[in-house]
Structure formats: structure tokens, C-alpha cells
Length: 435
Image 1: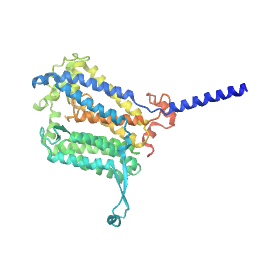
Image 2 (image 1 turned 180 degrees about the horizontal axis):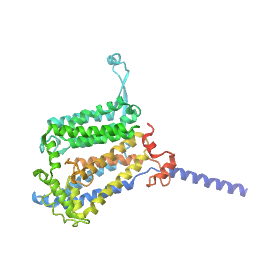
Image 3 (image 1 turned 120 degrees about the vertical axis):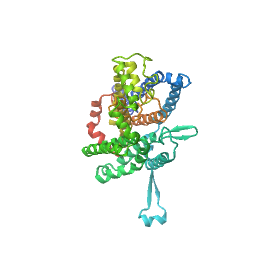
Image 4 (image 1 turned 180 degrees about the vertical axis):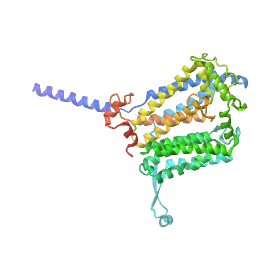
């Protein structure tokens, strides 16, 4: 009797322990590490923006904190979107519904139904909006890039970055094998060509970024990578040749880049290089920059990295680069463990957007490539761009929330992940299921 009772108690304890283990295994993951890194980057941005913009604001008869307050409001709105969409299932982005075909079209088209999907709607709407912007929006600084709605202005090209991420992930998820064929790849390029053309008409650098993001999404899905690399090289050479032939301010930027020391319009880059050089190893200290006093245009925006280097030295510049490296590493960990192909590819798109913009911004301010007007994510002053990027981080955090982890999974130990599923990272990134 006693033995039987003890056996039942032991069995009950084992069952409870098993249930507890199952619950522990099913815990939803939320990447607080990534959230902290984004918060930290935005905080650094606020400090540098105030340091770089106080004099400029005063020179325009504004409060010294004018740009700081605007950035605080922008980040606040962005974080609201980030939190909300971190709890909204990202799979709503690929919503599709099949509707019956009207009778008079059934015989003509040979189909009884048709499909409407959110990614296609987003692409069509974005193409139409960008087309309107390129031809009918007010001219601002010599280009049609902004739309005013109710006293607020925004750049549609910033929305286009997220649209191509979702659309590229959707196309690759729906037909992963066809996209690897020449015909499928050509079709994928043609889908977004009108949108890219409208963007390039007024903002070539934005078009290059959008094309780069879309290319990264398709590239990760590809089995053969060499054709994509060759195509990227051909496109880069073609763009450079076209810019030289067409002339205009784009061609002038190439000339300025080649003769930055003698060109009258090369002062922005030249003063930025002076700022980086004068900072030395550890910089002049917070607020100690001299180039921000009207010598470096857009010191709180496109050229903010030069102020970082002047006030905190090469050490500060490297620290910012390391911070972005940590952000991209955390994103890589989540992508490698994404629940499905669509989530992984959306994550790749968001990660590639941050990486491309960081690289381009730093290459521009160091005069490695011609000036493009690309901001440094989370650190530069911005409106639409900052809000949309924080919204994208919210979508990315939801991708991480869909992961059920075991023990130390996603703590940065990729070997643990490999042991869980016995799949090598390279295979995992390409061979997700099409749920």
C-alpha cells in the first residue's frame, strides 16, 4: 500500500515536471537584446543631434533644442508603432483571398476565380503614389520627392523600401523554385521596375537602396549566387555610365567626388573629412566640434557621422560601427530561427536596409563614393525615415516572437540552434517551409 502510494506520488511529480518542461519549451521569444540596442542607438542619436544642431537652430532664431524636440517626437511616434506591430502577427502582410470570377470573364480568361493579395495591392498603390510624386509633387530643393498631407510632409520612397521587402518575400515564398529560373527572375525584376523608375527619376540614391534591398531578398532565396553577383556588377557599371551620359546634377556629383579639393561644391565632403581628421583618436569631447558651426552642411543629418568622429574620435566612430554590427548580428540570429520562409525573408529585407544605409552613409562622408544623401539609421535627424524604420523593427520583433525556443536558444549560441534542428545555417536560410 505504502509502496503503491509512493509510486503514484513519484509518477505525479514526473508528470508535473514533464508538463512544466513542455510549457518552458513553448515560451515565445522576444528579442529584448535587439530592443535595447535600438533604444541605445536612438539615445546616442539624440545626444549627437542636440550637439550638432544647437548652433544651427540658434542661427535660425529657434530654440537650441528645436531639432532635439522634433526628433524626440518622431522617435516617440516610431516607438509606438514598434511596440504595436511587435505584437501583431507579421503573417498578415501576406494576406490573400480568392474571389469568384464574374461570369462574363470566365470564358474569356478561362478561370473561375482570381486572387487578391495584400503585397500586390501594396506594390500597385506604392507605384501609383510614387508616380504621382515624381510628376506632380511640389519641387523642393530642385526635386519632386515630398508630398504634403494636412501640413505634414513625407517621402513616399521611404515607404517603398518596406513595400519591396514584403513583396519580394511574398513572391519568393509563393514560388521559391520558379524565382530561381531565368523567366521567374526576370518576372520578379519587371514587377518592381515601374516603381524603381519613378523613384530614380527624382532620387537615384533612394532607387539604388530600394533595388539593393529587393535584390538581397531574392539573392538569399537563390540557389545559384554567381548570376546575381554578375548582374549587380553590370547594373552598377550601367548606372555610372548612364549618369555620365545624361549629365545634370548627378553627373556633377561624380566630378565633385573626383576633384573634391578643388571643386567649389565639394566643401561639404571636404569639411566633413576635416572634422574626422581633427577628432584624432579620442575626439574633442561632447560639444567640442568646430565644424558644426556652419562649416559642415546637414551636420545633424546626412553628415552626422563626421560630428561623431570629431567629438569622440576614431574610437567613437568605431564604437558606432560596432553598435550597428551588434544590431545586425541579433537580426541574423532571429532570421536563422524564423518560423517560415516569409518571415525569414522579411527579416532579411529589414536587415539589408539597415546594412545598406549604414555602409552608404559612412562611405559618402569618407568620400569613398559620391554624395548620395543617405541618413545614418536611428542616429541621423529624420521624420518619415525614422518612423518607418522603427515600424519595421516592430515587424522584425514579431518575427522573433513567433519562435518557440528551447533552453539557451537565441542567446547568441548558434551551435545550440544547430543541435535543435540538425540543420546547417546555410541550408536553413534557403530551405524554410512555405507555411
